[in-house]
Length: 351
Image (tube, rainbow, N blue to C red; front, side):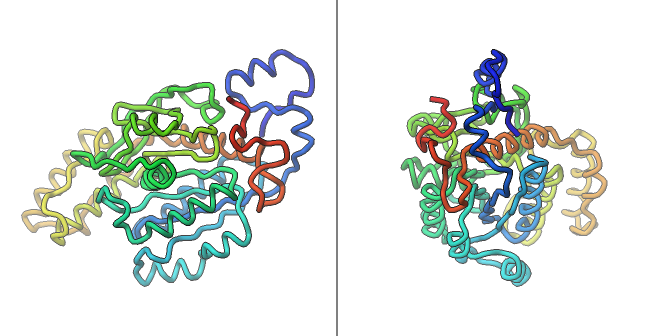
């Protein structure tokens, strides 16, 4: 929860100038400790549907021990589902119409498995656009992951994503570009982020659109914010990933190779596996190609014990900061995006 500047102690202003969340006493008196309603538009494929739920739910749950969180998952009907996933959605998810009727304080939009660069060919294109249009007018802040970032950049800023020469896949070093933004409070200046994508929005495209970059890397901008500095949060990577997420994805790629859905045997995710793990997986590759092993022999249990997670702490702090920013600006009425006196064009008074 934020600090309250209940006196004229100079440290309050100093901390505020450094990006810490410090509320005036008048602003604090407008707030009540209450629940926050956060939507999760889950567009991930069946194999990752429930894991993605847990990843984002865990991050939200760890972000604050005072606020009460109600998480509301929903998806888009045009995304084709198998029987198990369809039943899970029917039993536990809301419809978009129900989401609109109840309202949200914040929204998270996941990525989706669409390899082609042209998003207009995705079956859910128009449905996703409707959600984004609604959220901008009715939700305090929307956090977009990977494909969702690309979609919003196209919908709102006419910046279409570009196909990359090779899949960006692995764990990569990133650096904070703007340390003064409240989202960066308490975050190490350098940290890692997992990526898994065939397409990108380039740094130039973000700049052309007036989007402010907070976290950058050699493989492109990762964390950016809309021109108002809060209402849309852009992730181009997958900071929500579990330690074993890339390993499970690698396994799925092997399954695709065995089923002839892809022609080549998958390469390793970059900067993710140690040399011993690579040796084990190379031995497995030789034996499965020779017909001595099956996918059931994949050494997931052995390798998962030795994997490092170098992104979770930074991600948890960023999400916690995001929740704090939402909490200090959202209206007590869940159907209204901002409390009285908040400027939607500068909700955090950072301009």
